[in-house]
Image (cartoon, rainbow, N blue to C red; front, side, top):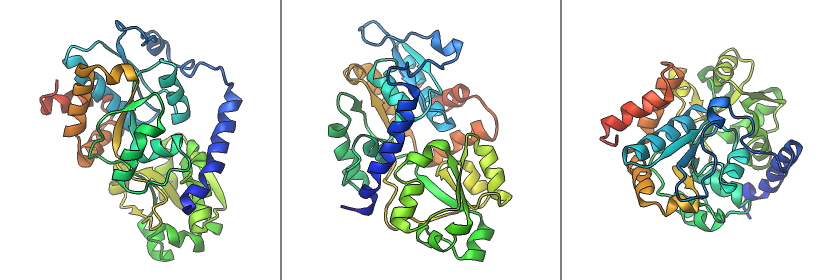
Length: 312
């Protein structure tokens, strides 16, 4: 059993406790805005629209818009429920039919359903997914990748000789780690860094705002930050992405997670997989930047990209 597999049980337990605190019978979409909750929420009947959901970060919203608008262009009846929340919430929404499509990532999706997964390569992860996700289905993975990564400033890297996660052991006791709040319960979060790389941080600081996290990293209020590899802030600020020699973080190709009903709808799947075929990591990074830096709306960014690819 690899070190990565050893720490997943503890991470899953943390997530389970967090979900239990919310109430086992709570509607996963109960906190949607009035506009979103006005959208159709029943996907069980054949006449109901495909309901595309998203997690609570920019890229997921952009991908959801790409999928929804591509399907709509092919005549599929579509509605959206965006900014639902973390994986623990939107998976439940898929399972109860509140939504029927959501953008996902191969490695993280596999470890969510199978804490003991032995897969390490992209091909192994993709092969293991269908059996792991139960009644849900995955469509074609994209070559576009958005990896969870840890970064430090160039100054911190040079002053402390930190270029790899393995180097964190020598600086973690006096350092603060910053990342999204759900990172605390992820297998590649603080528990994984401690178990696999021997890095025990002085503090974990959760962030809901990526912009605040960037500012705090630049101001040395945190010394290590967890980011998505497609966030433009990494390049814009010259951050050093730390290598992961023990493959603690699995490959994370963009992949649509759908209900069985959607999987059997050839018009819907054809439209979504056309997006998957056309999308690259570089383009995904640029789409995120248009929203996060240029302050464009995700739906407009998606529309322009789809038109440029003759998909809408």
